[in-house]
Every structure is written in C-alpha cells, then in structure tokens.
Image (cartoon, rainbow, N blue to C red; front, top):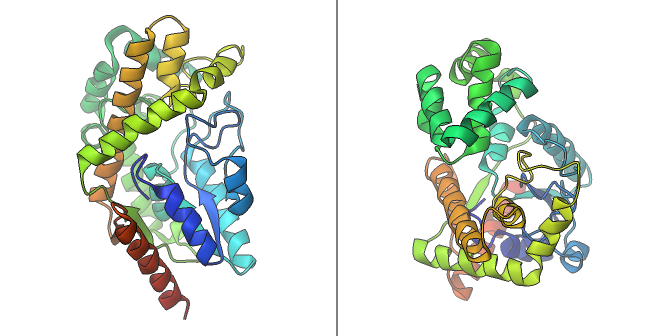
Length: 311
C-alpha cells in the first residue's frame, strides 16, 4: 500500500525478484485498457519480468465496482495460492483493500437516473453541494468522505436516494446480520505501506512524475480516448486524476498551463486522501524508501516477515 508516486511498483518488482510472489494490482484505473501512461501502468518489459493480474481487464466505457474487484481479487488470490506462490497485492486504491478485508454490505445497484441528477447538481453548484446534501441524510458518511472525492460522494448519496437508507445504516444492518461470518477469508492478509517521511518530497515526486507522463505522451493517450464516442467526462475512467484534467484541456475548458497545474494539484489531493486512509489502518507495518539503504532494509523486512509466517 502507499500514496501515488511513493514507489510501490519499484518495491514490488524487487520483491518479485527475490521470492515467489505474483502481483495482483489494486488500482481502480489500471483495470482499464488504453489507459497506460496516466495510470503509471508497468511497461511491457516490466510485465515480462513481473506479470500483473487485474490490469487491462475493462474497457474505459465500463464501470468497475469495488464489489467486482473483491470477487476478482479472491479468484486471483486462490489461483496464486494453488500454484504454490505468494499473492502480492500492490496499489493505491484503499477502498479496494478495505472491501477485500471487510466485505461489502448488500447495497442497492446503481441507478442511472439518480446518478444523472446528482451529476447535474454537482455541475450546477459543485461537489460541495453534493457533500452538504449527503451530510443531511448520512452525516457519518459525509464526515468520512472528502468533499473532493466525487465518486464516493455520488455513490453514498445515490444509495440513500435509491433505498431510503443511509450507507452507514446499511453497513450497520449488514454487520449485525452476518456478524462478520459471511466475510471471513480462507487466508490471512498482512498489510505493509510505504509511508512518506517528508510530505514535501512526495509532492516533488508527484510533480516530477506528472511532468514525465506529459513528456511520455499523456495528452496523445487521452486524445485517443477523447475521440471515442462511447466515452464521456462523467465515466469513472475519465474522471480519474490526470485524465480528467487533460480531457478538460482537449475540450477547451483549460489551457495547457492550467491543465498541468490542476493535474498536479489533483494528484497531491489524491495522495492526501490515501495517506488519511493509511493513518487509521490497523496492524499496518510501515516501510521507508527514502534512501537506497532504507529501501534495502524495507525489502529485507518484508522478506523476513514472509519467511517467518511461512514456517
């Protein structure tokens, strides 16, 4: 686990070289085909060394839910274990880790009409208005969800408008009904996270990586998506960090410099949300990659831990 641009992939590759790990991606955008540069998806040479499961499994026009991830991840984990290897889950979509660990309440299915109404409100008055409306009907979820997290805001308000019950209430009812037994796993999860020792350093890494993505052809990549009639700015794939800002640039809503600035800011906000998740995560073992020495030490710590639990 770790914030965007924190060095998760580099650590995962080194671990694969030293142990019989198989990587399972935990990234809500790397699931989409044709979205490579802006997601930091491993290149072909890297995938040759360390194949990643659960990347390139959806078209950008599709919605990929947390519940679908959980089902897919459980299948992939079972396959890796059956092969005698160790599953190594790598990525920064913290919600996916949570639903894998805790399961999901029986929530209502998405409703296109309700989603359109919520998106219209957001377009007219901003996502802050959606957050305020959610606070009226589900204050617990509103306190947990950042006003700049449109996908989760939309889903939480949609759940209430469709079911008449808050997401908080549905989760509580689910927990009381199953007492956790339905979500029990046949394996143990062990959580490691690359923790940013210096926020300023992480911010610099984020800026440098975003500029590198632009140099590598991010605008051209998004332009291919922009020309696709099946895609629009309301889809989760296109609303993802980086892609949204370049899409707005191609639509003429932002000039190039504003696109770069907003892309970097949005990525920093994503990292902040990821770090907030990590601060409250139970039984989390922190890893430091600030220097070559600490990187090597963290690799050794993970391997020693894996060997100890394998005995």
